[in-house]
Length: 337
Image 1: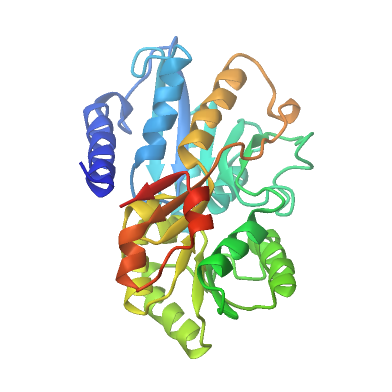
Image 2: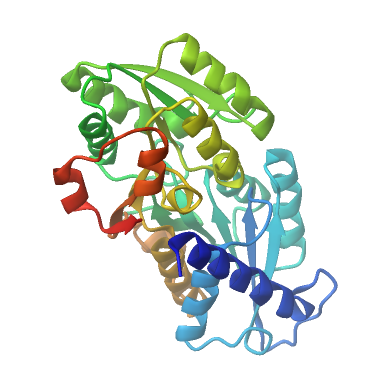
């Protein structure tokens, strides 16, 4: 069975799991007093494999969904305004913990409540955005996991230059425009890392922010106009929901592209290097468990990624006429033939 078939099977299993488990999770459901209720809000349009990892981790910690715990899922489908409305709904339903994925959803939850604990499943820069006072002592009602570690930006640029040694202009697609712009705090740490690495490597960056899939064609047009020779794509609700289109546009314009998470590579992209999102969601379940058992978010340090993966798609390389260097092949944790 091919990697793409495995990926589709995993996604189908995830969707079936949510469908089969939807009856006790519906908006009108009533939980017995003994059942713990948690809320979950994200800007994605629906479930994927990371949510299955989260549910499986809760099960491994002894929770039985529908019997000892209920999860109220809220999908904002790329709308920050909708995320704020959904977070307010969760507060009104008196959930005990809110799990929020990505910075806009976390911000929405923070606006909705200053008392209910909030667990960040994947935050960009929680200190720089003011979500927590520090990683070691977050304070307030927010804790969880950050996707950013100190040298990931530099490693990504180095990998991309290893694939395209002659590339001197690199495009960067991240969440911006209607959402946080390229200079907004949510992206400042990412851009700072990339700019520092670009100076060392002697390359220039073209940073383009998008807030929706409709802006992708314009983003690629901008990069081509600026003569970008390779591409880095930030993982965000918008890019993840539109990963198939991004992968196709990169291939059409023969741009070697590096992605932050491997879901893009499973969808036909060339290369990914970054933290394992399923692993982060499993660890988020551990935060939920500790909080339900009495821990205070202010006392739980924010954790950085511990598992990184380099994933290559040789079919994607062949499609754009790229030969993968032997040293990159040796470093790969997973190769899609």
